[in-house]
Amino acid sequence: MPTSARLTQFYQDYRHSMTALSYRLTGSWSEAEDIVQDVFAELQQNVQADPIRQPKSYLMRAVVNRSLTALKSPRLSRETYTGPWLPEPVFEPPPETQLDRLLREEQVSYAFMVLLERLTPDERTVFVLRESFAMEYEEIADILGKSEVACRKLLSRARQKVKAEPEVAPADEKKVAKWTREFLKAAKTGDFGPLLEIIREDAVLISDGGGKVRAAINPIVSRERIMAFWQGIQAKGSLAGEWAPTVINGELGLVHYREGRVAHVFIFEGDTQGRIQRFYMIGNPDKISRAPRP
Image (cartoon, rainbow, N blue to C red):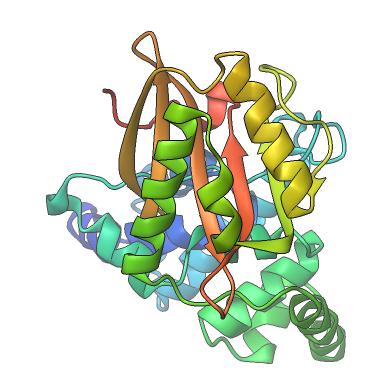
């Protein structure tokens, strides 16, 4: 293992990229931070052991293994989760951390994170290591303890699932800003009519309450049903409160506050024609506790 000075350098060099890797695999930034901290803590305890010749490979193996183990835990289990599971959003940090730049550069947009949820843990791992980190099949096979042939098959299945999903357009800041403005007007006035022209007819709204707050237990499909949902909860006062445009996963979204507390986080996903094709509404307090305060 490295000396204390080299360990500090490893931490500075790899902490952000290892956290981004674990986030891709687990869907939880909080969990990813804990995993990376645990990996480096273990290195610290073994500081006098044999030196690491390839620190990045060593750290990636440790982070992948811990992330896959975490996915089997009750706190991250999708099977026992109440309602749809959505990834934990990552909010714009203070500029000095440069995490906002990292999220943009390392392709961890929210739409990308939701896309990864379509894959099994093994498919997800192979896909991320190959597509995002450009790892060779030999390295991936070694990390997962599988053959190269098996890893190639996993990647092929993952790519097929990804291709089957609607194409997501790169975020256009002007269009996203328009979506947020129109949605804010509708939330305040109850008039959702102007939103019709910027929402696809087959749009989907996914609401994640995790069984801790009220949320739609199934995705809401079609523009008309989504409109009815918004109008219904607006009439009940559920959209009342304060709203703040906020950078989430490197893109503009909305944070909704009620009585000084974070109530929901809203994220929009667009198609290649510039219309909204998916709304993500996250209310699970465990996933939005890091949202900036009003």
